[in-house]
Length: 549
Image (cartoon, rainbow, N blue to C red):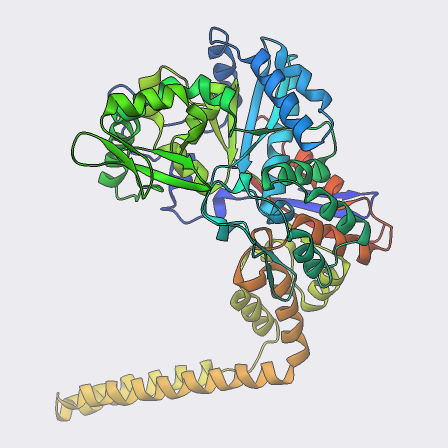
């Protein structure tokens, strides 16, 4: 679909599943080619409206945590100094539902795909609220208890990575870390990243307190005050609700047993599970550290270089008494979300969708219906400078999905260069005649003729390659254009959305549009809405390009 807007942008939408390999687990799931499920559990369904409707109905009889959510989320917002979103009040209604997504607490909101995950959740929630006539709230779940600091600590400026090196210890829950020194990193990044001065002032002002509070502010800077709710699961009251399941995880090896069943079915069909399942899928939070809990081989448990419990009963008692000191890992965290929130859908990237393939039996054993898995949309943003380069190079929107070598091939094929095809045809004709003639004299000569023809083929291959190289030298300017576009679309050889920050993309968009276009964030929202007018929730890649209004 091609949509031109009065705000100075055009958009096209491409089905993301079509770009995946035939054996990619997400595509296999999407196309219904997964192996048989277990006797008591079923693989997640793809996100059509009938499945989401069924999920909505299934929540009618479940305990609603609305009062707790209102109380604790209001407190979290107050602690961060952020006004409470008006949309939060909707969660108090018993019929309220949520569409949840989440991510790590990356500096300034992280790569643009975080923005696209949240926008997907907002778009779906609006669609469902209109469909059902009842409140549907988009929720961003802060992955504040992750401890892999390296994954959240850097920003791409367009030329290099700017990395935050905190003065305090690294290795605990990242959401609890002080943001001291982070504003200097933001200033260094903004110098070359096209970030508007006013935006930089806001981002640095947001970088106060701890990283969880800063991320809450950054998310609302992206989307405004009232489009979604930001939730931090590192909360004692929330974990009290989840305490019973954490105790079952210790006493029953709940996740290990259930996930192993799903993993075995995937492995038997030739797929590698996304996440390794452990005997205990909990961490212990203590003294600035997040330590994995493991059996000690003597009937007790210990946290790596930390706390010890002489028995399973002792560990369960500690979980019941101090649930805030325990943290679910990547496999158990989606279950935590589902217990706390009235989730009809979980929006995630392909890796998170793959996590979901490992969890059906966990949900079955808990008597909780697994939320519908919704792959997020993606986008490629093309400001005017890149659009002009693409037009001069003859690149179409759909070619953005192709690697640089395919662009070069297209450039060469359009040039109609001289090649050796006629020469090859003549040689092959002569070789066949010589092979027949010489073979009558001595059959052993047939192999010699074939070898000589193969050598000439190789020489002609080299000649064709030399012609292409000569063309590239002659058309150096055209090749340079392709390289510049490639650097924008795939910085560091990775998709734009996995490297560039949304504020960086928005800054480049504003600078190059000279005020003629709407803010990029609004245009992305419009693109997502336009792409999902049908009931089929197929994940899309949106190519958004600047045009003259």
